[in-house]
Image (tube, rainbow, N blue to C red; front, top):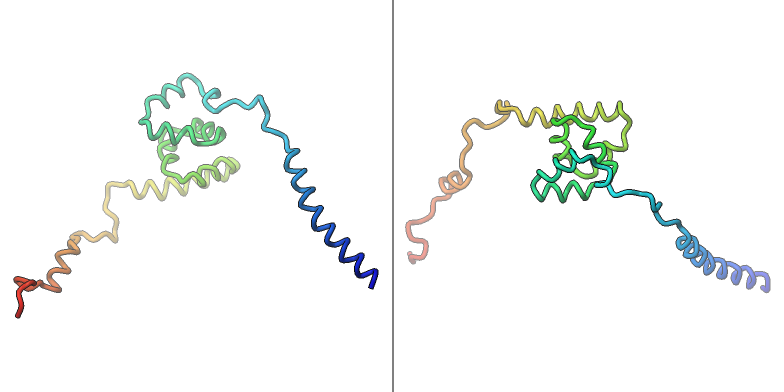
Length: 151
């Protein structure tokens, strides 16, 4: 009976001390390096001029990107830069994290998908004569001449 008591007491003390030790470890993490520069400090004057020429909405969005994403953006050709704006933020981060072969494969898919959607030719499955849905509903269920009139 006495050994069981000590095992229970030891288990309870261990469960209390583990979270306390975890809190101490979290407080000792190092702050980010002081030599880290903001992304705008790494841009050339030409790049800053391009950013300043964008609409305000695009400038804000660009400044919210991580420095690595901004740096990768400037390595792209102009056509790919425009396509890069259409990507979701998660996709942009994934592109930055890929190796060069993976990026080229991803760009091939992106250009095929988005490039095909931008073509001036209508899609093969598109309805050549779309019908206004409200007209179709009205024809199927005509309203009486005066709906408020009692019959």
